Amino acid sequence: MSAGTKRAEQAASHDAAPQSCGTGRPTHPRTLGRLVRGKNINSETLLATDYLNHFNEIIMLLEMVPSMSECFDDAMEWTPKSYETHFRDSAFTDKELAILAYYNAPERFRVPFDVTVARMDELVLAGRERIAEAIANGETDRIENAVNEVSHKLQKLVDLASAIIHGKKRAMDQSEVDDILQS
Image (cartoon, rainbow, N blue to C red; front, side):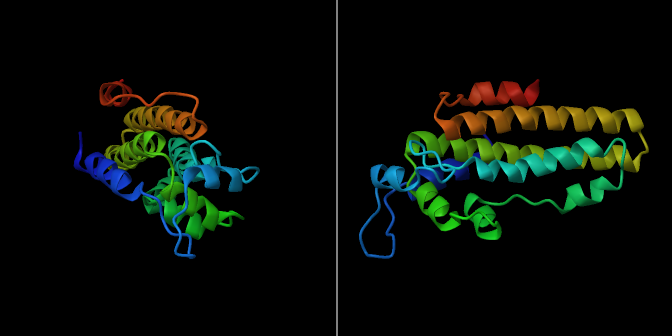
């Protein structure tokens, strides 16, 4: 398990306690579940799929690199964003509610979600290094192979994160995530 993944688990466990909603009273997942209905935030997991747009963006940019190498500059500008930062920077109508809900998401969803996000961040950063090396060496086939490998693995992890958000799939254990990354 990487240091980033370990930090994500620790942060999620620490931050999963009820938070104050500005009234001095703690919020609770059941109450938030009612508040998020109809807001593109899952009422069971208290997570929003909008966050995955951050990763869909880098997948799209990387997939354009083999035919439009100038897209790699844009892909290099992509940086990991925390859930909170993503929503703070977004035009999502209910962004404050999404952030509050995230900090109150049940640990059984939030911990595997945060671990999956940490793995996605790591995959993108390492993958870009391989792609940059192939570009620097002018190896067209290697560029395409590296892009396909990274985007394929990243899409699998996005699908896993989406399943966690929707509460429809149990979280994968570490060995299953490792299998995705090594396939």
